[in-house]
Length: 289
View 1 (tube, rainbow, N blue to C red):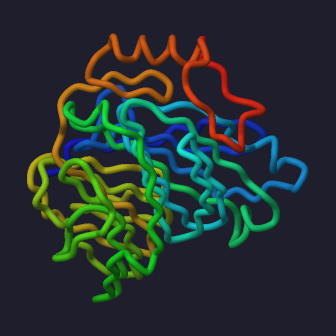
View 2: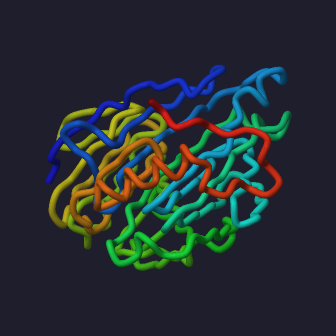
């Protein structure tokens, strides 16, 4: 059952790198364990802006970040010593746990290939028992992710279990994240099986129960939804959801079930107690005031 429709809000991360921010939203803080969703681009930046648009080292706690590219390229570095390039269709899954720092750097021309940099980045809250786990990072090639083509619909199961398949991406709680491409006239049935699901329209438009929805809108469903999504024209969708984990507090890049843990993380970053990526230590993003 459709609960609400959320319109994305534009945010500028600096020097033309703009995102559509969907979650968190005032009236809907999460979908299952997902507490944050940004859709960046597609943006073709000129060469003189590539370093200026870089996301400098910054910290996270209490979550896993899911980075999934539609076009372009990003170089990831973190405080575990990881150096990983992510390309379209691949997954970077970083679990912050008790604390991690990372940067995302862009280099010309590869970072803006294929029509410009386009990134889906989501934050997945961790269960309380895992909020202070050891940080970890895993990269998954697109060849490892289950794909299916049927009835004018192509899907890639990025994470979790859906449509009779299970992704190899290691998660900490029940969830799903599916990239779907619909041809004109195709009808996608939501996978069901989860308490909360959502459909984000990345490109094109969709139809649900006689209403049309455009790129940048997210439809949030409550209950074990098996609603049908039609495509009056070609559309790119992100279908995601799972089981909610309870209230989570968010400040900047920090997520926790406890406010005092957020305050501790703020103090730790302010006082320089987070380790920076070993080969990316010359700059960092200060704590917001």
